[in-house]
Length: 113
Length: 114
Image (cartoon, chains in turn purple, cyan):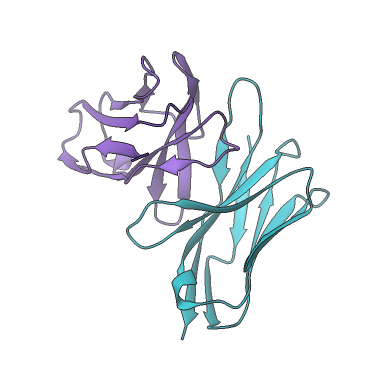
């Protein structure tokens, strides 16, 4: 089954404790992206990647890192999480460009205390 | 960078009526405009999109119109049904060789009353 998976789905952590949210797709898509969703602010793009080793900043990259060492995986790293990073995070992928249908993962709800 | 504004933030309609959501964008170079629907507790799903070389696109009860001169685009849902109740997001993007940044509007919560 074609899908985008994220882990963990729920995470409670404390300020400053490094964490990684994994994202994996099995559709051989080139384009992958991370978004955060906050009430009243909609979806905001954090980082995106056009292909292996090619990443670029979205609208809200501060406090986040990403890597794209393999085509299928696009982890989101929070080196030193802060409470303002409490949010719902979505990973998404599309075949080549964002202009094609993006498939979203199920979301990761993060609470930073 | 691109800025997308979406109105209204909430919309309540009677079943069978039409719903219209409007978005404006700031970057005249943007050339791709998707619409996403997000049901409560679920992930966003693309429902329709339009590219800048097209003025209107229709898919059954859903249509999108684009006015490049005015930099705004709209989603039209006709004959609304209870299952249309959801949050709808518009977005704008610029295709470029190095990648595609996608900027979303703030969302519209649509409630269809039976």
